[in-house]
Every structure is written in C-alpha cells, then in structure tokens.
Length: 219
Image 1: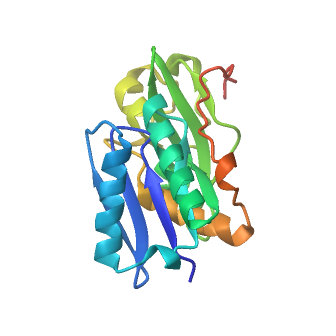
Image 2: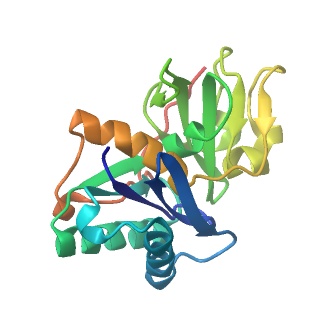
C-alpha cells in the first residue's frame, strides 16, 4: 500500500492526514490561520500516532487550491520542503475536489468563499469507485452570475453557505452546511492520482489561485 501524507490549508480548517492500518487518521484545527509551524506540529503528532517514519512515506500531497492566498502558500511551501528534504514526489490535489470528495451525493457543487463578493467553484461527479472527478473547469465568479446544472444534487462549501440565497439553483438541491476541504479528502484523491502517475517534482508544486481567471457561466 502506498504511504502518502496529505496537507490541506486552503480555508480556515488546517489539517493533515495519513493511512494507518487501512484507516485514514486525520489531525487538524479549525478557525485557524494557516502557518507552517502549525502544519509541521500536526505532522509530527500524526507521524507519532501512526508510527510512520518519514523513510516510509512515498509522497506528499497538498491541497493546491483555490482558496486562501496565505493558506495555499503555506501548504505548497511545506510540501516542497518535505519533498526536497526526503527526495519524494508531490501530489497536488484540487481543494474544491477534496471538498466535494467529503460531501454526499453524485453531482456536487463545491464552492469556497473567495471574498470580494466572489466564490471559487467547481462541479464534480462521483464515480462508481466513490471518488469524485471534475465535471468541467474550476472558476471564480460572483454567486448570482452562476447557473447550477439541473442534475446537481448537493451544494457544499463556505461559498455556498455564505451566498446561498444568491445562487441560481433548482429547488431540489441539498445543502450540506459547514463543510470545508480536509486532508482526508486530499488523501483519498492523492492515492488514486499517485496510482495513475499524476505526481510532480517538488519544484513544480505550485498553488492554483484562480483570482485572475474570467469565469464561465454554467447553465
């Protein structure tokens, strides 16, 4: 079994995760400002709890964004530092995909509050394996400029929590509140990505901000 350590700091929920005896073990703090020291402390506690020494780690995964500018830089920097130090590859994972992975449903709208009256959002569908895949590109837009496809069954994330009344969505859409991206979601997707060979060298581990992107309205 592949041993991956995952980091997620795109929002106010800072977390790390790894597998131990087949189960995902996650440690984190919520309502926290992402700092490298916090992530490293959580990683030390995680490795102590799982008994996994760094030589046994095959790769470092991180939530690449979109999300908090500072948080994304912290995750990328820690992942790069660990990867360089231990000569391991990096697995970048979309933070929106990690959010959708932890949500119920088959067709999922994942949205993170981007401030400035905008949201980062993406649409995802769940495969028979239980993992989610992107159903189109990720975007940045004002919530009332976005039409949600009729077959979407679940809406999650701070961008949907905060601006729910302004989204153009059908009445049957289920809202799951207070769900944020987590290292557990990053880990599940990173394991599959690693198996496909979707890894990068540490120097290519970069955040994805989306702030300069022109959004495409979905209908």
